[in-house]
Length: 341
Ligand code: SP5
Ligand code: ZN
Image (cartoon, rainbow, N blue to C red; front, side):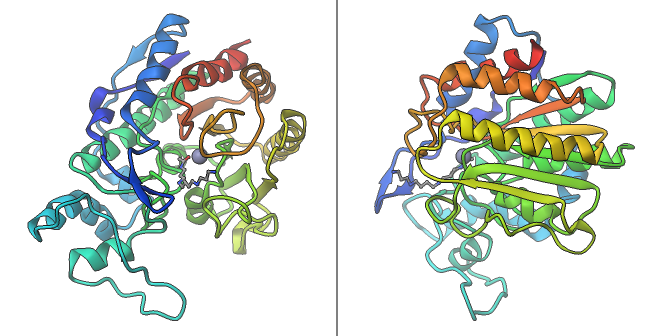
């Protein structure tokens, strides 16, 4: 199984994350990708290849042009105002407020944010752009006939919407990959999001669409991030009615319960008859993850990789979260090895 990877992820190296009222070293840090790459190599999973550059068109297919332009200059604009720290919004267009993009950078940050733990730092745009290209290159491999591929994306993407960043995400890599399948001949694509957190960005992008089935297994938003989306009654609208399926689960959920939800979700995927499957692969479901509350053990990742393989679909794995840095390499590669059998 081939891995797509680029060192450009290291350009995303923020110094600060807003956590518990403090600015702490980010959970989403460069070493994450290095642990995963190290395990891919030590397990001899397969070739590791650099991404191609597909340019801006496939990014604009899922993201607002002004939002993309904002991301490119946000840090520079922030620094130009003389601010000392990394770029973090202070005010958001909340209930009953004007949904109008301000001129001043501090206001723009709030307009384009759906969560404010995520600082925009020097190099963030370059890394986010490269991460999207890693996703697009993986999709191209499948379009060219590969049965499976691993896009080792960093920064992650599933919390990014059409026009908002947050949750450590800037561009929605999985959504960009899914759209690329559709724009290159696929009739239907399924996305299964197994990250601990609800894929609010992906859900939002495809919510009214009948060509993308979105299935997400996650911590109940009543108890955890992203708090404001991911409930079971969010089932899609318009042409997309019935094609958004959420499985929110409570604190301490063990693998047996989680796997039952996965089995049900994979059955929905089978019924949808997609041409390709994208897995938003977060391994923050691990029992020792520092910011999550499910109880999966390392061996469970092998088991569910095998469950996904049972569908027999061309499958692209797109890296999302997972924060217990020592273990995320093992758990991620366990999924891929379980898939390979
Ligand atoms: C891609 C991804 O996994 N993004 C996750 C973003 C989560 N950001 C908010 C974290 C808030 C953590 N609160 C932790 C409470 C720990 N007991
Ligand atoms: Zn997550």
